[in-house]
Image 1 (cartoon, one colour):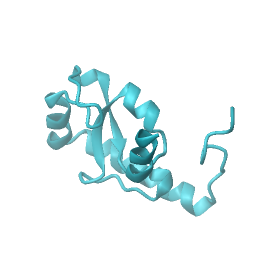
Image 2 (spheres, helix red, strand yellow; image 1 turned 45 degrees about the vertical axis):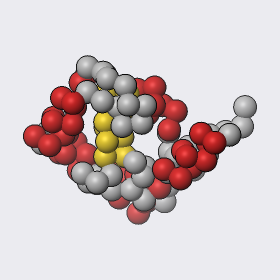
Image 3 (cartoon, helix red, strand yellow; image 1 turned 90 degrees about the horizontal axis):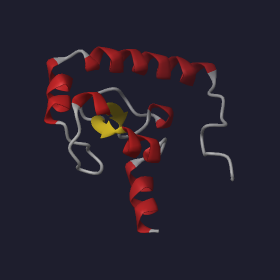
Image 4 (tube, helix red, strand yellow; image 1 turned 90 degrees about the vertical axis):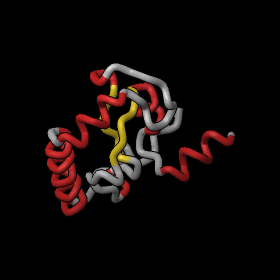
Length: 100
């Protein structure tokens, strides 16, 4: 099986620092009433299925490793299966994968 794209790349120190900062922002965002409300709705952004809040995780629509930010506009609840399938794909890459 070919290596997963972007997982084999060791980010440069500046990129690694930015990703750490964005992860800190994501942890803070998870404590907000807004995120708790998103989880309470119980719906995966990608498959649309209902889940218990503890079965959903925060997904970055544009992954941090691809330049995404930890903002309300770039984070969505995702079930573990969808999050695992999406990995580091951008929305365009996910759409293209679904076409094949």
